[in-house]
Length: 226
Image (cartoon, rainbow, N blue to C red):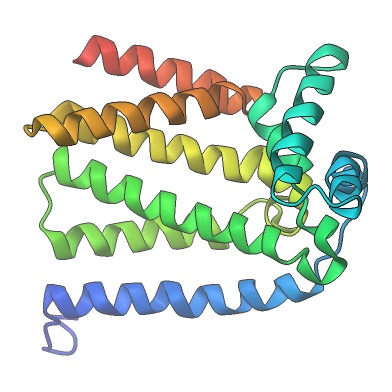
């Protein structure tokens, strides 16, 4: 831009444009959520939630459905309790018109957690300026969200997406919290970050096996580095 057009963008302007690019790129992804419908395992995992709502358990229906479905799966299949708890809360149980809330959650969580992780890493390890952090975070976020291997299973199928996409987003959030904790100088902030890290570790421990394995590798590496 400098050599060809003899024009220089201010870093803040580039940062704003990059955020606008993310928002524009997300519009068609969110628009497609209107066409997502429940399928396959959505029904088997969401049946208890649907039954609880039908018989009037109210807000308790969410906890009851998630906990009992995860407990049943633990004894009969595998102990991925975090994923199965979320699978049981299939939004389609509220009505088919609400199923789009699942894809919206998956797209939003992946975008936010990726953006935050890159911002934190570039702040503490690259010492990048705020505008540069935003620009680099936007590029990485756009690449991961727009070039996902299969959007149908990663974003628009709730059961699959919540097991892999959402849980890996929680892993990205865990990385952000742990890195921020290791550089924190404030006692209160450190305590809050430590609590957040414990909760996120508990969630990632019950996620899919890839996320759990990478979480173990990251935490061991972080302990050695610290």
